[in-house]
Length: 259
Image 1: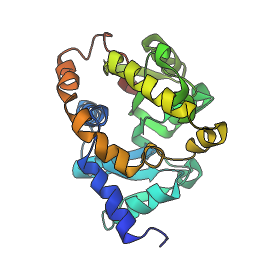
Image 2: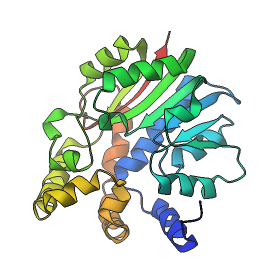
Image 3: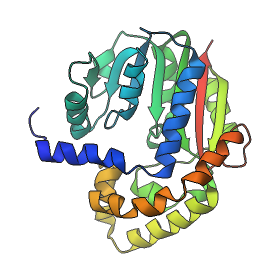
């Protein structure tokens, strides 16, 4: 594919300089959970919803090998350019990896987009080797569910007990399950987003479900808000001492194992 212009590609990469606190926190936790899996170099991974390839690069830097899947062409194009020569494989659906199994499957901010999540988790389990790991992040606390979730194509937010039950039904058993995120900030952010969405018609809201959060929010808006977001990072990092509690349940990060 050659439809991604170099200037647009560079603009996407520039966004890595302006991460929101919850994205920084999510990457920190994913890195810690990969370490907890104890997987050695050469282990095979599958990253479902690989986006712009941040997590793919994290895995490759650890010597893992595998596949990234994303249904958005622009994300696959960015990954192809960003990870050229690394040996990473890319695809658009699970059909592209038919017959293969993996030691680690990652779904970061993806499961909430799947209507029949229970059936999908069984598919994930079948793609894992015995003893393999499923690593995920999802939004938490259904009380926070609102127009922003609907606009971004979320069918639900999760509760801790729900995650343990649904993954258990798929023969995936808890190894580590952390809660994080500042609920009060999430509520404020939800109100701001809801207000913005009220200004748009339903067609615009529906259209946003087919876009990445970056495309929906806009490059300039992300850059403009960065100084304000970055000042909140200390609130997120303070939670590293309390991850095993369920005090902060705006989001969950988990590592479950197939027995």
